[in-house]
Structure formats: structure tokens, C-alpha cells
Image (cartoon, rainbow, N blue to C red; front, side):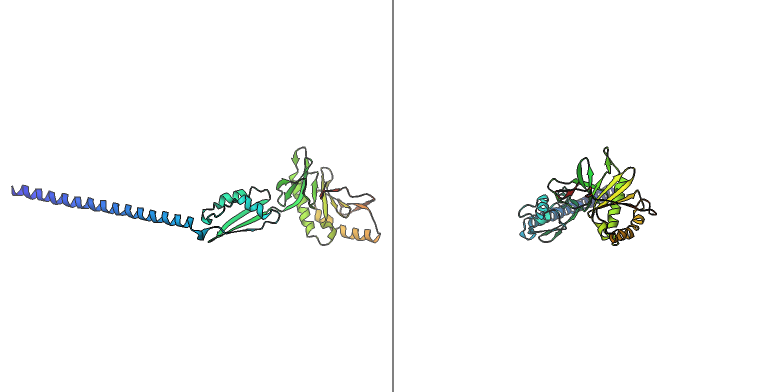
Length: 276
């Protein structure tokens, strides 16, 4: 009998300890949930306070790098709302809208807390116009064609003609022409060569370069820099002889340069600010 009571007492103590352990675990879980609720409430309160706080109200928008694109157009694309909180601005969505302008190559937007937004635009820089399908298209240094020249737009960019035939673009010749324009832009030996009006591509004879001063240089397919080195003494000789008119200078063979003079205007005609 005594042994049975002892066993019952041991079992009761064991159940009591187990119950206390379970209650302690319930207490810990309850305390943790209470902490989570309190912290969440504080975060929600803080967020709502910041969102409605006039301290973070967007008061100034700075636009940098926009030269061709009007500032007002950038702001319209940004779609900034009156009294908008700067922390609620979706910068990625705003950047995508601004990049919808064909003249925008890249854009970065950052917040300058508490109340300023900075929009930095990198515009496309065309180096020439490419004639294609009876229209003119702006083309960048890397050969990217990005938009058509508008009817009312004016430009003095050189024109690339003959590069697009039967719906196909001769990308290799276009690249060589752009490289040639870049080389001539820093070529100091003959300043007049910077004023290129047109580069024409002939599938048989190669590239022909026209200048605003009335000169046509036949350059062939390659080795342009070496061929141009022969031009300076030739022009000096023509100046000494007081040669006038439209000059066709064949530099295809650097060992035998031929010059033809014609009393004709250049084949590049200016119309509404665009040579065609």
C-alpha cells in the first residue's frame, strides 16, 4: 500500500513539472507574439507618420544633363504629383517613363532627403544623318540609329548616303564612315576637312567625301588616314595655282593622286537646314 502511494506521488510530481513546462512555453510564445504585434504597430505608425509628414514633402526637382530635351518635358514624363512624399516616389518606374523619350540614352534618379529629387539625363549624341528609304535618321557614334529627322528640324550634321540599298544597311561601311568622321573632327593638318557635308558609299568605288568648301575626296575602301596625308601638299599646290571651283581629288592610289576641277556647285544641296 505504501509502495502504491509512493508511485502515485511520483507520477503526480512528474505531471506537475510537465504542466509547468508547457505553461512556460505558452508564456514565451504569447510574449513573443505580443512583442511582434507591438513592433509591427510601431512600424506602421512610423511609416504612416513619415508618409504624411510635410518634412518629406517633395519641394524641388533638379534636372541635369538635358540640353536638347526641354526641362518641362522631362518633368511631364516624370509625372510628379503635387505635394507628393519623396519616399513614395517609384524611381524605377519614373526612369522607365523618362527613357520613353528617344533622345534619352540613360537616366539616373536619386533622392536628396528630405525634399529634393535629382534627375540626371544622358542624352544621345548623333554624329551624322543616315539617308534611308528617302528619309534621314540620326545615328550615334556606336552606329545606333534611333529616330527620324523631323520635317521642321534643322541640323548641320554630315549625311551618310548610299549605305542603305534594297532594305539592307551596310553596317561595316557605316562604321568606317563614322570612324572617319571622328578622325577628321580632330584632324588639325587641314582645318577645312572638319566641315564634312556628306559621305557617299559606292559599292564599286568605295567612299567619297564632300566638304562644305566644294571638294570631293575619293577615298576607296580603307586606309583613309594614310591617304589623307597626301592631301596637304596637294591643296597647297592648288592654292598656289589659284585653282577655283569644285575639286574632285582621287586619293585611291596614294602614289598617284589625280585632281579634276569643275565649275560646278557641290552635289550636296542645302534645304531647310538639311543636306539631301
